[in-house]
Image 1 (cartoon, rainbow over the protein chains, first blue to last red):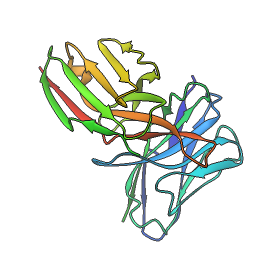
Image 2 (tube, chains in turn brown, red):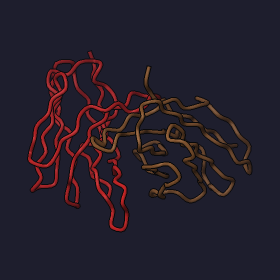
Image 3 (spheres, rainbow over the protein chains, first blue to last red):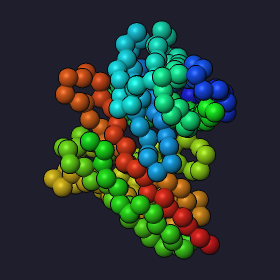
Image 4 (cartoon, rainbow over the protein chains, first blue to last red):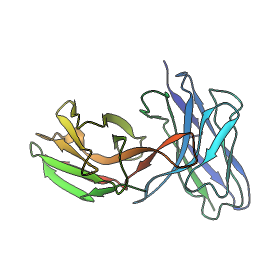
Length: 112
Length: 114
């Protein structure tokens, strides 16, 4: 079955630690996106990528980093520089033509 | 850049109708609608392109008024399964970028009671 997987579903970390969230898709989509969701805030774009080895900052990139070494994979690292990292993180992908975005199940990160 | 959705919340009885609006201060290329159930990922409902095209999904339809830079989502004869948060997204390619991206509204929370 084609789709997007994110792991883990829940993640707990201590403040000051970097943490990497996984996102893999087997839909053969070119574009991939990372969003952060907080209550009442909607979806805010962190980073996005349309091709391998290229990505752009979204609206709230500070404290985050990404890589796109393979078409299927777009991991997000939440660094210790991110001041308020506790949130629900969603990965999405889309084809170039339709722009319809398919979302993964999300990772809920809690930093204490 | 973020589109504005209204209302913020809607409470309905099963079988009633609702309209959710999405407006943008920027010219629109396309509008996307998604529904998210609590704790789950957003699910794509439909996309509307320039030209006022109206699309439908089950008993949910939407319109796109390019001149007014707004879109409306119509939910008719609502069912319990329609409960969730509805997001509109407007597609844009920002100046200086070669990549398009969606700007999402803050969402409209729809609750349908039996």
